[in-house]
Image (cartoon, rainbow, N blue to C red; front, side, top):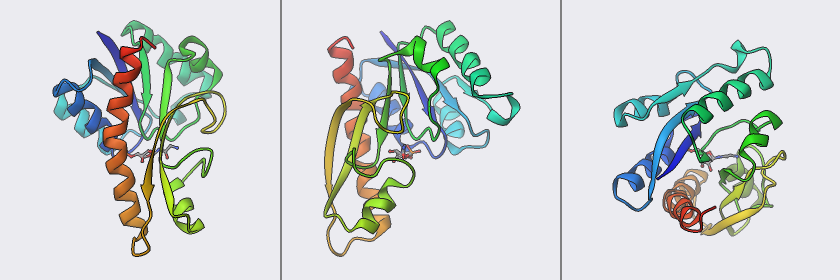
Length: 190
Ligand code: GAR
């Protein structure tokens, strides 16, 4: 069975969706580890509730990115993780982690890339006044939201929608698209 590590920094609603998909058999994979770079993040409470093993770390306690990524590689290899799923992990992945997991790290981004990369993509789309935004799942490379696109789904922005409405609609799409896409990758043996 494919072993997944979910990386998250905050609330973890996508982690929730992935766990639910595992429980309901929508996704034929085991979430073997939750990695979190924010020691008090809500997602850690959720992981404890669900019984997912966690590795929480404070990047400030390491000399540099190479040091904490080397630690992550050690843990991920020990756990025999096949696929790293970034779910609101608000940090660029560096060479140290990318190299051993080339083609095995995916990310979800709350816009239709290449539009609105980077932080607060929902706010960027809202402020730009676009009528369609959406969700992208892509492979991770060294750039910011630049890797090869795997899946996308649109979200219509109606005239009476608030920023919060858009955030909610984007999350809703994410919660089905991410588990379904992970399952597709597993079926294809990627
Ligand atoms: C998600 O909307 C995800 O697309 C976004 O962070 C949110 C995390 O929500 N990721 C990025 O913006 C990455 N560039 P969650 O913690 O509730 O899963």
